[in-house]
Amino acid sequence: MEVRIRLQKAGKTSNKRANYRVVAITRNGGRDGRHLELLGHYDPTKKPASLSINHEKLEKWIKQGAQMSDTVRSLVKKTQK
Image (tube, rainbow, N blue to C red; front, side, top):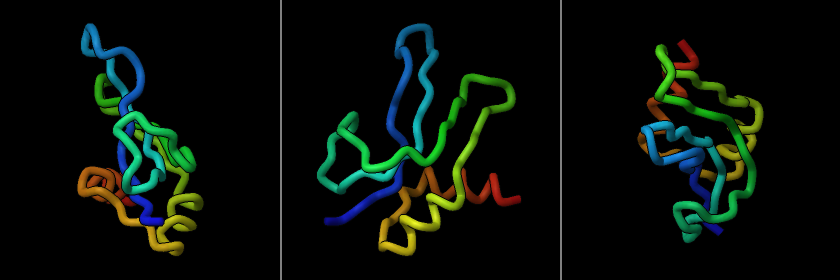
C-alpha cells in the first residue's frame, strides 16, 4: 500500500471559502476519498494564511514510507522556519 501525504479539499467551494486538510491517504484514493489519518489544516483564505500541522504524526507516516506531495512539502518547510 503506497501512502501519500497531500491536501484534501474541505469546506465550501462557492464564495471562495475553500480550505484544506493535510491527510495521509492511499495512492489510489480519490481526491475526496477516505483518509487514513488527519495531520493538519490549511486555510489560504485568511490573511495571513492559517496552517497547522501535527509534526509528530507527520514524522510517523514519513518513517513508514509515505511520500509528501510538492505542495505539502513546501508548506511543511514554511512551518519549520
